[in-house]
Image (cartoon, rainbow, N blue to C red; front, side, top):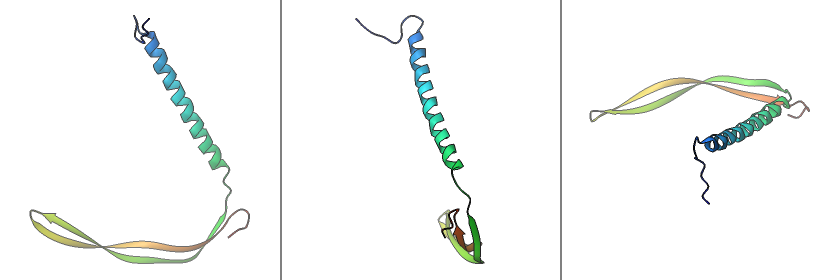
Amino acid sequence: MRFSLLWRGGPALFIVLGGIFVLISLVLVVFFVSNVSQVQRYQAGNCTITAKQLLQVEQHKTHTSNGHTSMTTTIVYVPEFQFRSQDADGRR
């Protein structure tokens, strides 16, 4: 006896593919629901900025075109913060 998923009309193929689709959908729903519930459990804390400054950083890039090499220097400004955080339990 031979078993084939594709017999006249092929409804077994649709049943198998539909089952796979439903299974994947259920896995995705469980995954996203667990992530959302995890986010809801977070408690707010406090953050105090103790120091701040704006750093000036030079970035060097080398470009090669038609056998010629050139270098460009770009100045980028980067904020730097120092902070103290305290969670909902009072730990720092």
